[in-house]
Image (tube, rainbow over all chains, first blue to last red):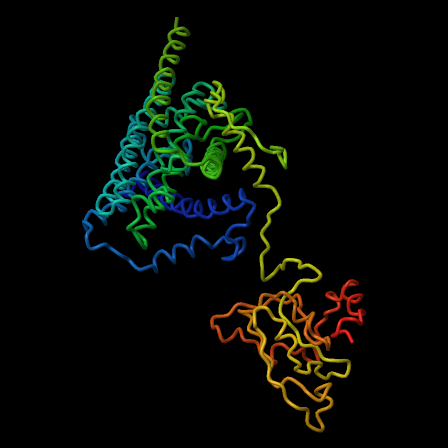
Length: 342
Length: 189
């Protein structure tokens, strides 16, 4: 029953769960700090040293707030919305290869919860379900701002998912596999996919900004036009779930970008330094997290640099620029593969 | 018309070039600016620990001075109340009794002296009007409070204590001292 493999998987799942939540928690703190630094301010610095306890204070505040469910809302769907957003945000992390294999007491364990052979498609499937959390929440609130936010969210996510998928097709053509584990392993050393697919990477990262509802594509919440967008009517921890899910999505998106285009757990000269395989694995995990943190920082950096798109500009960019560009990228990749094979 | 600053730019509806239409160079330029600001000096002053440096002649909360022997200078003449454009100052005068010579400098003194800090505009006219060099504005801040009544400051808050005299020499600039020598003005006599 309790085979070492099962115990290892349970420990791995629990630790990924905890790490995801802690990183999402401290992303809120990091975002406020980075925003402050970019605006020549100090940011939160009163709760604990350098304000390090600020996320805990925010969490306590969220739990203590009055919980309101509007009378005219659909109560079941109103509660289901944030649950769905949170669940789907947490589901993607199972297929990320956090490291190669680690050797404990003579047996090898893979630092990946499960290696689906259609891993990339799974990511797309789960992020597509993620839009339901927003749609259901916005619709169930029975409020015009919520509904507008939900409409924008769903049309934006559906539009950008196409370009994202097309960008991924080009990547799959050059790697020849859908499994994230094999994609990671193929990028060993410094053979990162970013050098093979620079245009694909550009399209993918722009689309992941839109998929995670981050600035400059944060039209679904768009506080200056729509009050709060789809979560206008939410309060207390249900609002907290929505905000938290956004940060988890950002973390997962960073992990997916690092895995697909920036070599995952691979780092330059990993096989030339004469380290034991366990040391390489642990260093690889450290490097993966360094890449993830850089991309989380990048998400925030963009947010505090670029103003929000207008809605028609957003749609025009998605349909008339990114999709043709992604198709061109596929053709280019195909031509290069055809030329090199002959 | 002649431009005053020479900074005006004529806005034209120029077609964007292909590179400009990509937007990416502009985005990278913006990111470079925000990154530069991340490491620049922060302008925040963490208030209770750090305090902003005030001007030498800052006009803050008032003080009623005592003379060298520790007696109150104010004689309740009411010139400050007349001079006050915001009508923030009120006072009640009283006669000095025998044996109170060490408390009040002259035969008349202010039994009640109140400044409403919500009305006060900190112009410093009371200071100019005072013939006895009694009232001065200082670099202290009037603290915030929850009640309106708390902002009517009486003598308990305005008169300096014997142990803790308030330094007003910074407001006595060369120009002020020169002005005080002008005997043609009634209150300098």
